[in-house]
Length: 205
Image (cartoon, rainbow, N blue to C red; front, side, top):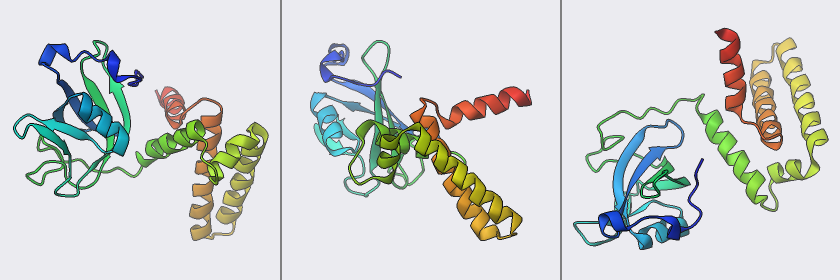
């Protein structure tokens, strides 16, 4: 993953101060729209955490959703191998296109429940990198492998108890706790939920 570290690394000369930007749904991976940014637009995007383009018709910056409220909340900003194009992964708020469709390519962008696990992992990884004070996830990372692994074990036991007692509501609740703590442990060990998926796919094949 080639994350944008410094705006100065980008090549703005090819398009007279502009670079193309692809906005992609971080959860579904659907391409939502394509726009252009200049240096100021990139700085504004990084500052407010919402995708801000440079409008070639209005000759000014405009935050996507500034009128409709359908913002594109930034998850990550990636730069391509030639350093002249950006891929911005986002969490969109509402339809993206001004016509009311999910994407500017008239595609439906359904939100799958299972794909939320990747989003949750991104959130947990962000907690690991930023370690904000007062966060339960931060406290787990600070306590280390033993504590996190112990929590996984405790939640596994609670899940089993819920299943054996035929308490479906508690079974689902504790299963959620189990998955959450397992993802924290994966993140702590430098892995992702997708690594488990790949292992399962390998066994299935």
